[in-house]
Image (cartoon, rainbow, N blue to C red):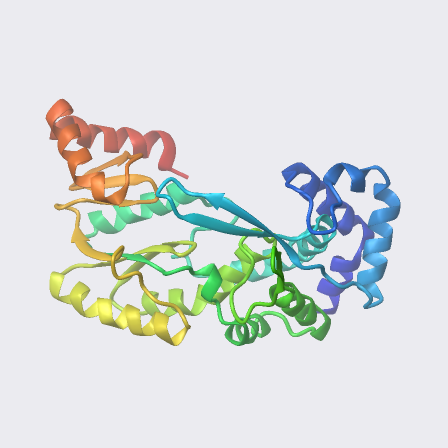
Length: 320
C-alpha cells in the first residue's frame, strides 16, 4: 500500500490525471473554475494541488447539481465535482483501480478495461446457448442514490487499508451537493458524475456478483443493469426472492414495475439489444414497445433473417 500511495502522490501521476480530466472536458464545479482557466496556469496548479493532498490540507468542495430531463418526462440528477476534485479523484483512480479491478467477478462488465456492453450482450448469448433460457430481468431503484456509506467504506477497506486514502474517499461521498436551497449533505448515495463513482459502484456490488455466481444461477451485470439466468422456470421463480433479499441486505431494492421474469422465446431487451429465441438485434424502443417491435421485425424480415442478423452482429461487433 505504501507503493500505491507513492505512485498516487507522484507529480507525473497528477499530470496524467489532469490530462484525462481535460480530455473529458465537462463543466465547471461550484467554484466556477473551468478546464480552460485551470489550463492557463496548469504547471503551478498541478503542483499546488498535489502538495495540498500530500500535506493533508486538501478539502473537496460540494458537487454542482445538474438536472437533465429524460425522454419519459422524469429527471436525472448529476452531481459534478470541481475540476480540482476531478483531478485528485482521477489521480487515485490511475493507481488504485488497476489493482482492484483484477479482483472483480467475470460477471461484471461495466467500467472495466477491454470490456464493453457488447461483451455483456455476447455473454448472455453464451449462457442462452448453454441452456440457460429463463431470465430474471432486474432493475434497481436509484442505485447510485441508495448506496449505504458505511457498507461501502467497509467494502473499500477490503481493498485499501491506508487511512489517508480512506479519508479521501469518505470526503468525496459525503461532501454534499450545492442546490438552490444551499448545500445538502447526503445520508447515503454517491455522486453520479464523479470520476471515482464507477469504481465505488463496482466495489459495492462485488459481493452481490460473487454470491450469485457461486450458485447454480448465471449473472451478467453491467453497472446496476443485470440479468439472472437459469435453466428452469421453477429455479428462476425462486431466484426472484433470493435476489430481492440479497439486494435488501445491501440497502438496495428491485424496481417491481420494471423487473420481470421472462425467457428467450418470449423476448426481452437488455443493454440496447433485443433478444428473441436465437436472435439478437439492436433496439431503440422502450421496454413496453419491445414486443410489438419484435413482431414487426418478424413480419417484415422473417425469423430466419432475424436469426442471421444475430450471427452477423456476433461476428462483426461482439467477438473480443
